[in-house]
Image (tube, rainbow, N blue to C red; front, top):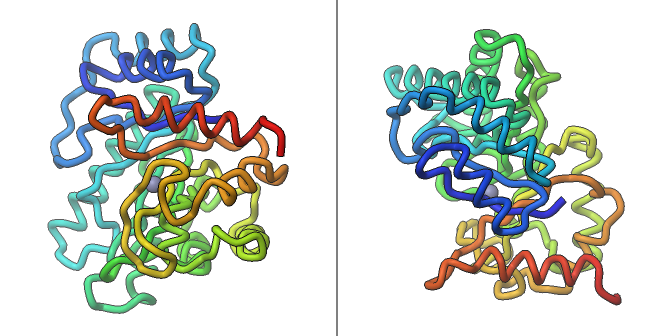
Length: 283
Ligand SMILES: [Zn+2]
């Protein structure tokens, strides 16, 4: 199920139109502005229009991505409160729109240490999920490149956060290939990929992985620097992405591009065409 992150500017139904136009089987969108705390209310009839557009399209899956400002391990009480309430708003919005998965970054411990940070993230998740019962949108914890004090660059950390949290059945994972590679997982090598999928299954359980972010990496393995490159134009490379696309253990998972759009804005179309070729062409 291949697709990309698409813009929701002009309203969430426009995101569906863009996904259709780009030829996506699945897409990711922001359900509120990702660089502001403020959430513009959904327009009148917007949720209905989004659901209708989605149902009438050939697109099979939608995934939401959370606000960048949110830090579920924030040390400042006001920021922590704001982070939790913003995630709550996004989760509620996903439920209204019928989006089954919301990708969130675990957060940054800001110097108080990994253990305390993971406990704080888990407490935040527990609270937010307790307040938004009913239609079950899952939260997908995304692995990170590990810049600064960011948590979740080791799969064990993601597993531990989920283990510490309540409402665990509503917590899954999103795996970003660029982040994993930058964090030191050698997805570029056949043995490294085998090992990585083994760890995914052992620590997270493949059934709990809700989607993949398919990005090549501008920086080298272990750099802990997060800069996405277009497919085949980074350090992970085509051969590795081909191996991933053809791995039957990942069958049926939404695989979403977050690669640069380029000057002509067609980066995702080019990357999608290349992915389809790598997934289906002769080996
Ligand atoms: Zn990502």
